[in-house]
Length: 624
Image (tube, rainbow, N blue to C red; front, top):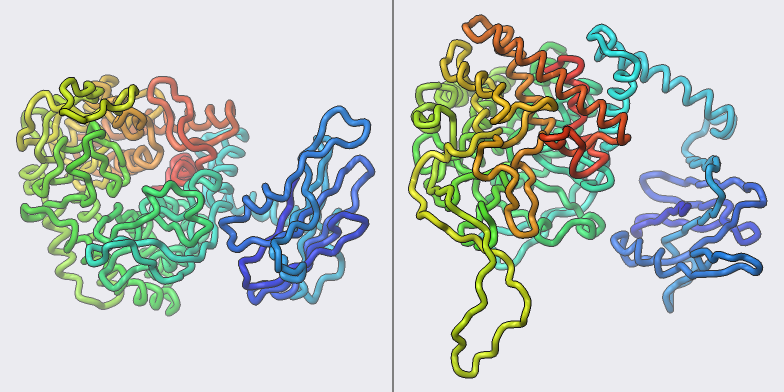
């Protein structure tokens, strides 16, 4: 076990050594004051090693530790150990300048030990917080958590047994435990600069999708996160939302992926580091804000009213940025920017900005594209903006006018309803006849031209039939559902009846484990997008969209109309299928997963993934 402390230059640390082991690490920083990390002396079976070193930056921390390891074989031992070498400081760096201290303990497992962090700022401590003192104190917090969880979610009253409740507590705890504080700057590409420029240094308090795989903030994930976080602790959620909107630039844009500083960049593939200030991400913060605004309004406190008043100008700028930069060429249409129209190796150029990555869109990106999901997101956003504007005594009529326009089912049908396929669709320059094929080696070389190396060339897209401007209606999946998912359809709409019928069709989206992202009958179902890029949103089951589907079903099941009973029946079956599969996979593997296989229900992708997949707690509690 390696237990380490490091500083980026804003504080000081020093090792307290006792017989060649680190007994404690002492330190001081402006934020923490003076502190000490105490390591207990353990039994004689434990082997101690340590490293006192220096790193020029926290992104190089792993290199420093790896460089301090040596393979050693003790006298009489059959197997050697990798051990830290003690002091390992660069030339010219004194030990007083060391900013990395690592204590290594080698034990036979299972083994138990206590490590105590103590702050000198605590002046009323009577006893050290270890042993029975710690256990007594932590038990109070366990009890408080249990009581609060039960009062907020009442899962027993929903029919869940103790095993399901323990699972739900783990899901919530991991989401809350994944909230972190980050500090640094993003790298941003703008049309006015040849090379990326550095955003200002800023803090970000945010949840993360996965602490081990995606330890950073994602704009569209965080809206889903705060549906659950705001239920557990509204002050924490307000703090998170405030930090995100303090990252707004003068144009009203927020970088969709927060890779703040060198340490964060060291963990991200280079192609994803630079953020383009013309590229959007779904404005999912309007999902939790819809309910948060009601809570703040009903609280009647001046503090909550002031929060809304400070937030509104930022929301206004953000909303205006979407309307200014993501508008389509046809009135009241919208288009995700950022698709690569010149790509030759993608079967269907990705739409990363939509959050749905490789979900199939028009095969040939053009400025004439119309994206259904973005239009629906803006319908949601306009309604919430009108509500907030009313509450802070700002002009709301323009937001209300746009909301009525974007929720007008007649106009929606004109732009996105395919009569041929009887489904909502994107619109653009499209053909289904595309295929990834390996290019043939050139046969006729010019005089003096050398033949290429004798190795296969990467597959490229070939177009078998020329594209035409049309509805992208051969593909049916999550995007097709958005007028339903965001509750834009009228409860008596005939289109709603068609969608509900299609939801239960096993050849389309229905599975015993949840709704798959792309219909089995779709041309792109299960297809690799490049030779080395496996399907992502092309069939797998995603919890966040299933949450929206259950929210919509619950809504229409409680609205008067001809589809009320159908929505109710589908709701209960889908909720049971989804919850039981996530629960069973957790019991079998120990993890909540990024996505689930639509044929077997098995967990796929990153794990543990307790970002939006933790919304299973809200689903179990029927809180939408």
